[in-house]
Image: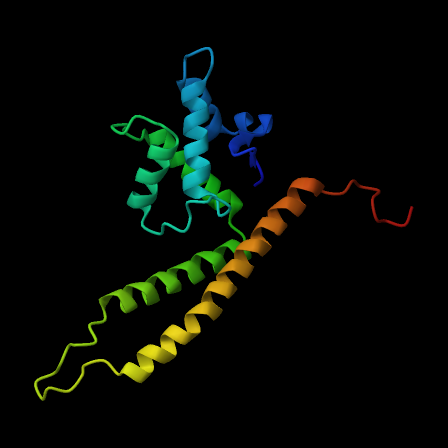
Length: 182
């Protein structure tokens, strides 16, 4: 689903987005003439749910929410309406591909490795005063981190390319007479 695009550091969306019930509801809930709230909320959906979002590195959803709200200059006391959750769920479901699922899984693994490395106390000893953690295994794990980061970056790049290609070609199917040798 390619309804969002970032142009000149501003989230834009295709007019077709407003034909889809969850996004139309966001638009209609903003009764103002300039639709600033609706644009902010649609941007919020993009930054929270799209794999191309610069905020997706923040794996904790609550932390990502705080950063997005702050950076979009939204009211810090903004209470997310149910229709925003529905729009995000709709968008995530509609834009999930095998590639995006792999990206999500890879991010999850990297988050677990990061948490593990954060929690290691190299000074921790067991009851026999021996180190609890094997320093050699820790060093070996750390040496593999650049490969993981590179793999993550490659997956992210492929997803961006995939979405750009779909946006260029559109998601229309061929006509009845296309590719039929006529």
